[in-house]
Length: 243
Image (cartoon, rainbow, N blue to C red):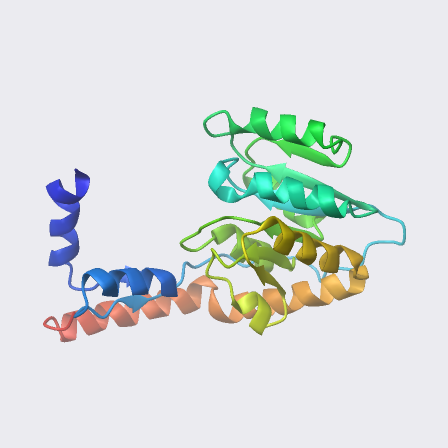
């Protein structure tokens, strides 16, 4: 209904169409083959933080999910994968707002798997509380079935945390740059990535996180993204007939 009432008109009258990932570009081109969408990623802030140091020997390490507690985020699959791996010396934190009562279902799954001592759920976090969760984490998890961008993955990399996510997200760069794992949205594939990540010494994860932070600083920091937008607007003004 919204498409018929106003969205279609807005899209077709736009001088330029903006996509944040290759998948969005492909979808625009499917509907409008003649359009040339702008591919400009979401920008993020780079936190001012000292270089990470490896955890002390014997310290418990934390794998963090931060986002909506919703079925599309693949959390049921993530808990099953964690149950299969049960990494020694690790805990998992799931942080975010409950949607549609899914948290209760997830808590029941965690209890049934005997994981209540290693998996904890927290409500939504922002500001300093959100930063504290990132600072504590050694690994970030985004097991979503689908994401148009996945800003939390970018934020985790900006905090120098390696990331495990799925091919349902546009984060192949994790593999090409060596700062994480990009696997099929399947329990077995996520379990394999968890096995690899949690078996590595902390210095390896710290090195991967530093690589990810450097990539984000070069490619997603707001000054670089803002310049791309400014160039796009200048081109639209100078060449209004182009689409």
